[in-house]
Length: 125
Image 1 (cartoon, rainbow, N blue to C red):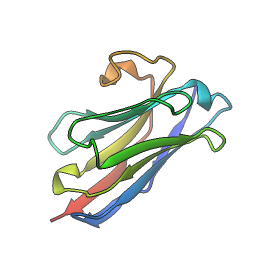
Image 2 (cartoon, helix red, strand yellow):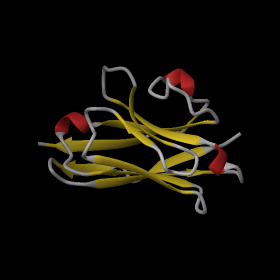
Image 3 (cartoon, rainbow, N blue to C red):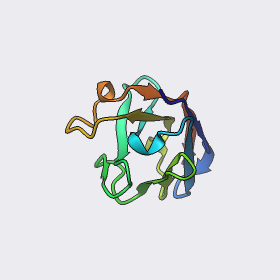
Image 4 (cartoon, one colour):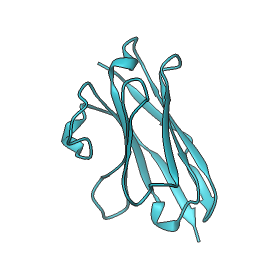
């Protein structure tokens, strides 16, 4: 089992940057595929990015491709989401998630077993 805690959210102007962090408990962090999702008010939770166990493979939603970068430091049990060129439509609660499986359905909520509590990101226009 893994416990996830996000941090780094806040208020930023459009065009600005933020880096989110997700710290994981336990000694098996490197065995988990990690993902970031987000949920805007009144909308469903949606996939943002995913990174493989060692960090060599990443996947992104089309809406963030070229602006967001997911990375991980297995020595620190932490996954990051660097968000650049932020837009008001990026406003949401951002969640990190973990799964043992590297599956083709990585963009689906049901593919992940563990979730953090979320961190709020607000982008003003």
